[in-house]
Structures are given as structure tokens and as C-alpha cells.
Length: 47
Image (cartoon, rainbow, N blue to C red; front, side, top):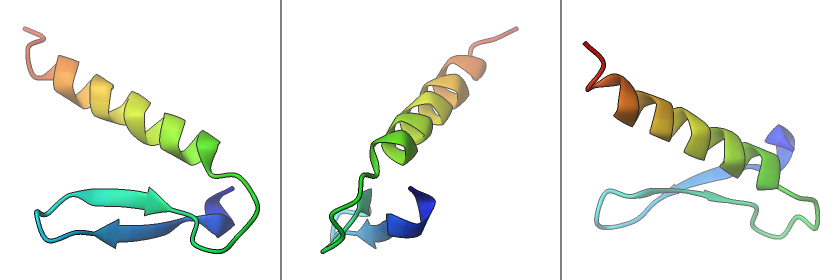
């Protein structure tokens, strides 16, 4: 799945995971990015 990923940054500074023309899935990479994002968000409030 990681071979199919292309990172795209839009004009607002958002980073998106895209697969462009590949027919293979990138769902696992997206799920991993979301899990890491939630972990880092929750970790900020961990005392």
C-alpha cells in the first residue's frame, strides 16, 4: 500500500494522501495516518 501513496499539499497547507492513477488501495495508509494523528492529539493533554 505504501508504494501507491503520493502526498499532496493543497493551497491551504493541508496534506492529503492520494493514489493518483493506481488501482491499488491506500486505505491502510490512511487509517495509519488517522491513528497517529489521534494519538498525537490525545497525547498533548496527557499529564
